[in-house]
Amino acid sequence: MNVSNNNSFQTKIENLIMSYENAEQFDKFFNEIASSDIFIYGAGNAGRMTYELLQKLNLDIVGFMDRRASDLKAYIGKPVFPVDTKEINKEKAFVIIGFLCNEEELKKIKEYLFALKFKKFCYYYEMCIFYNILDLGKDVLKHHKDKIIEAASYLEDIRSQEIFFNFLEGTFSINIEKLPKPDKSIQYFVEDIDHKKGYSRFIDCGAYDGDTAYMLNKMVGQVEKIALFEPEPDHFKRLVSKLKKDPVAKEHILFPCGVWSSTTMLKFLSGKGMGSQISQDGDIYVQCVALDDVLMDFAPTFIKMDVEGAEYEALIGAENIIKKYSPDLAMCVYHKIEHIWEIPCLIKKINPDYKLYLRAHGLYGVDTVLYATC
Image 1 (spheres, rainbow, N blue to C red):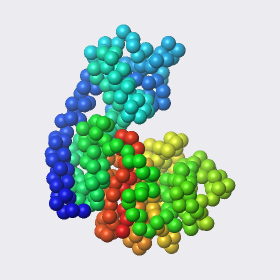
Image 2: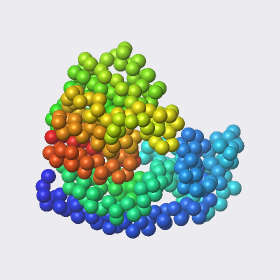
Image 3: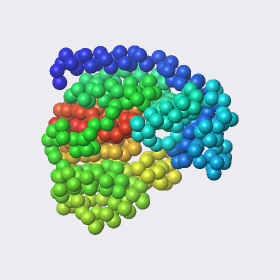
Image 4: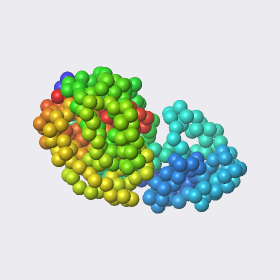
């Protein structure tokens, strides 16, 4: 990294922090919604998630809007209106778009609402961002300024800097249009990053039903060893069944466990598909392990972590392995806002020789991954 370019980038990050650290935009965003008649556009699963999120913010809704309103009169106890109804005061209404869609679909939905004379609306994911900021604290930028600037200094290339800046700007402006656009590269198998250790002894934390393991097999063929960790019982059963029929390595080690900073039992929110996670609101307890405790002699060449927000703690639990073997790393850093600066700083603390790169693999900042190699 050119020193002058890096200094310029750090200055750019400092200016970004100064622009948003007074937190006025958060109060403005909340007050506009709270003073409006709130409607959720979409009476389905994402609409339900939007409603549950609003409840956590102590915000109630007037009802849902849906094109199926003639058949669906009510949803989770709230009335359902046709989207083009004249019953809604559009000057007072705030519409939250409550279904999953890509950028082009979202643009068309916003144009449609605007054509119907709705003036105030946002997307569900922007509400998620706002909620996560409040959970972290509105003065997060002021409190974490030094760490953010430190993390920015570690990024090795222009693309990583672009993603870091766009992730922060999109998040703290609560504007998904500013979040990083996805790269075309395949997640965990990025061609423009030189993974020096390769994939021959692979640790998959958050193995789900084997999606990464089978992509690994497709990209590099059968590997020497793979260790897979998946605490969600249903996912683990599918993973075992699939690997019995179609192995991806000469040796498989499967753990029905989560990964953490220590070996312990933790509450786990199950039944949420790919979003099942360690949580104080969990409905079951699961065994969690520190990688240092269970894979001392595995000698990994690559560690992947996509563990729904437990990545920082899981890295702490793998510190000895990382120090001893310096494996290539792929860490998801989008589940918690602070991970985009905390995890680069932690990796550099464990081993200062790592070179760090960011790549974005999904829409709206989802599947943003930090790659480390040395």
